[in-house]
Image 1 (spheres, rainbow, N blue to C red):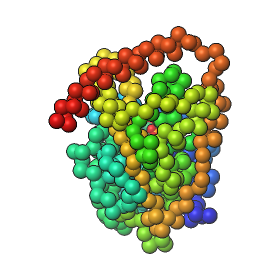
Image 2 (cartoon, rainbow, N blue to C red; image 1 turned 135 degrees about the vertical axis):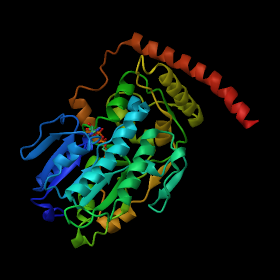
Image 3 (cartoon, protein in one colour; image 1 turned 30 degrees about the vertical axis):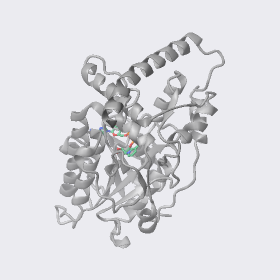
Image 4 (cartoon, protein in one colour; image 1 turned 30 degrees about the horizontal axis):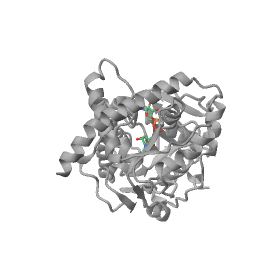
Amino acid sequence: MICEQLTKETVLITGGSGYFGYRLGCALHKKGVNVILFDVRKPAHDVPEGVKFMAGDVRCLSDIEKALNNVSCVFHSASYGMSGKEQLNRRLIEDVNVNGAENVIQACQRQGVPSLVYTSTCNVVFGGQIIKNGDESLPYLPLHLHPDHYSRTKSLAEMKVLEANGSTLEKGKGALSTCALRPAGIYGPGEQKHLPRIVNYIESGLFKFVYGDPDSLVQFVHVDNLVSAHILASEALKPDRRCIAAGQSYFISDGKPVNNFEFFRPLVESLGYRFPTIRLPISFVYFFAFLTEQIHFLVGRIYNFQPLLTRTEVYKTGVTHYFSTEKAKRELGYEAQQFNLGEVIDWFKSQGHGRKLRGNPIKYFAWDMIFVLLLVVVLLSWFPAVVTLSL
Ligand SMILES: NC(=O)c1ccc[n+]([C@@H]2O[C@H](COP(=O)([O-])OP(=O)(O)OC[C@H]3O[C@@H](n4cnc5c(N)ncnc54)[C@H](O)[C@@H]3O)[C@@H](O)[C@H]2O)c1
């Protein structure tokens, strides 16, 4: 219903082979829209007939320009550096996220594309401070306070996209309308960024502790809710909706704040594992993440290992930050559907995950020993630091 007017339009999704971009492409295609998935890599799944995949790099202006023929809306969702070891590759993060966004804007202007929807992140305002029911009036976090380069560059890109709102399109095609959606952590069946890593930690016996205040709250967004928010946002950039979304940002989530670890409890237990009972202070885990990042900085070129946790991940998972979706409801007509982790659990089980009755006790014992050793080493370095700071 929301998409009737999009029929026969052509839209382009940068990052169209990614988890979210591909789901958005399929949803738009089902609604009769011509879809181009633009990405440096092919989608992992079959591309439905009628959906076109174009190989291209947002770091290359001519790649994007070539792809924008007759396109009426660009969903700019390509990004790099969100989690894991990618987070530490600053140069590539900046190139893809900032230069990429500049290229997308310029290509839209040159090719006369009237609408641009940017997939931002709620981290543009969050840097480890407690935020309860924050809204879009919150200022951007000052750039130097971002603990990670990904969030800093997403913030810069969002600013650039919103500044470009109202700019003149070449070929006498009027003005560019832009908006930014700021999702919470995305989940859904087949998600590849966070969930497999979490399941890997669970299965290899590394998920031994939780941290932070048990009452801390964060938010998530189911991929289908985010898809619907993007479609609504693209509609709300059109003149027949008085371009109500033009120049605006919107927080998008499932709406229900939840403790990060409790959110994943059904996944842990349904896969047959025990939920950890050890709770560590967040400052301790943050310190551990800091040490891991320093070690990665020193040896990353020789051995680019996956850090167990980065400082940003500690904040994102252990410090209360959640946002109101009122503005998205009011202006876009966004209504979050209710989901749970059921289909995610089914997906992992269908991929053969779940506790095997005969695990390898030596492997678990070895991990336990390494964990205790690490705990002692970090404790010995963390404790004097805390004592010194409190003097
Ligand atoms: N996953 C989350 O929890 C989350 C939370 C908040 C915001 N976001 C944002 O949502 C968007 C989608 O996230 P996702 O989880 O689907 O990520 P994803 O990594 O699955 O998809 C990103 C896609 O961008 C593509 N890409 C990377 N560099 C590119 C380049 N130079 N040119 C063209 N394509 C390139 C990748 O190949 C990938 O397919 C991103 O912009 C991300 O920053 C994600």
